[in-house]
Image (cartoon, rainbow, N blue to C red):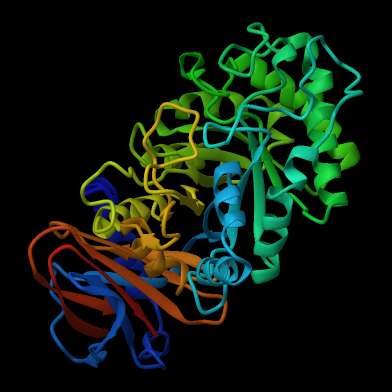
Length: 469
């Protein structure tokens, strides 16, 4: 199963057993609040269900899922999606009441409670057109023509409205391409960065951050480049960044520039797939890079999530952030693959990631506007003709996490090697606990154990169940 391997399971079980043996009896108190439960399966969508009760004195099976709140892991920043140029444009096309309703549903306290969102520095593949903030026919290293005017029409107003819906919304921003004149291709579409523009590009970041802040949108973190290891064959705004280039840019230019001008803005490196974990290790091994970097941004398209644990184990002071992965609008189960996405989310949280951020928050029924080569869908689809909403399977998977898990929650130990069952548990800052159970196989009855208490719950096939107490 993806959420743990056999070696980790045995190691954790041994640690738990020794910890249990040494714990005073008082530490094994029963949960002090009744269980609540919600489920998505079949025709149910995050529906409240009757929850089992914790019981004392029942035999605890060797095949149970065991929880240990005394073993804490990473602190959760939150869940969310990208507010791309395309997403902001589609939201701006809605009438004010319908837009507010959708933002409340995604970011509001009675909705998904999304608390992290990605924005783009200039255009991405999900934009109406390719643009940067300094598009000039000749090089402009002094950034005389820098302007964020493009974003003032609908992007910045939408970002402000989203943060008004959730004042705790954490924004991080990623560039897909520097201005074309900074690249060997002299184009926004593909090509690689030229190192002699590093100083100008660092100031480009500063101007972006200052400009957004002046317009009322504080950006909390930036990544150096979206997907550093590809230029997508020149089919979309994108840029190649060799490892040496990213390291030199961070330690010699971007790090010092942000430290001087916007010291509270974090820097995340890589912003690409798990299979590039060795690159993240190499970069963090340089002390001059290490000192400026808060963490590593990860995508889940290639490789296993255990790559995040590999990097964490070598650099435990650095954070992991899962910054991109979205549904495919062409898949027949786009609206019902909640169990697949919940299994993915569990693997992410069990490997030290502090956030889970989908790709576009909203797109239309064709996965557009889109100037790139991909068939992504939105967490929510807005029909271009009727403006009706369709919620993806990923949306319903998110509900089981973002509605119950608070910012500042700590992932706690859970172990149990059950076929087709994924599990992850957290302790919220208010002392409440959450356990998410995902069943990707046939119906199963599963026992969960917490200290000297246990409860048994039946999990339907293709289901996600959230338990809270």
